[in-house]
Image 1 (cartoon, rainbow, N blue to C red):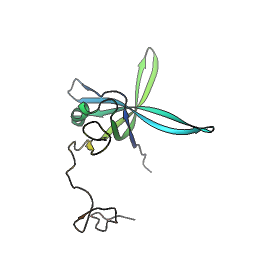
Image 2: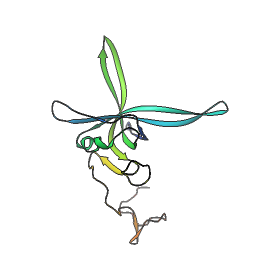
Image 3: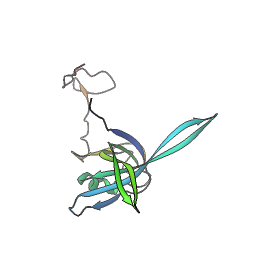
Image 4: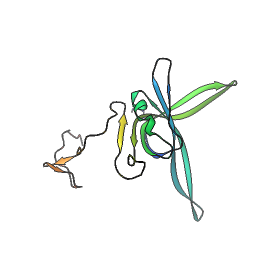
Length: 154
């Protein structure tokens, strides 16, 4: 069986995204997100935040960097990568999310309702309006979809 390394997170940016370039001209965008979680501790519910560093490489990082500002909600899909280095004779490491897809969530004016814009390695343009599953020429309204284009093996 093959190994699987896939992570999907939705959270809020804890700082503005930083855009840097390698000596070869490759764009590297980095940002951090916080994921909030509630857990029960004794009889009380406690809020707990988990923080993750995200790396987005290439043209899509250049395209979204200016929209990735502190407090914005984003969805991130990618894989975990361990960054290793040596500092003052000690071996150090840090696990980061290497993003393959970033979704800007909320509206364009900074609110949290409305549209989203998706960016991935393959494309970083806004999805066409009206795209989605169709049944008999009518927009999908929550009912079953009968006309699959792909053969499902199960």
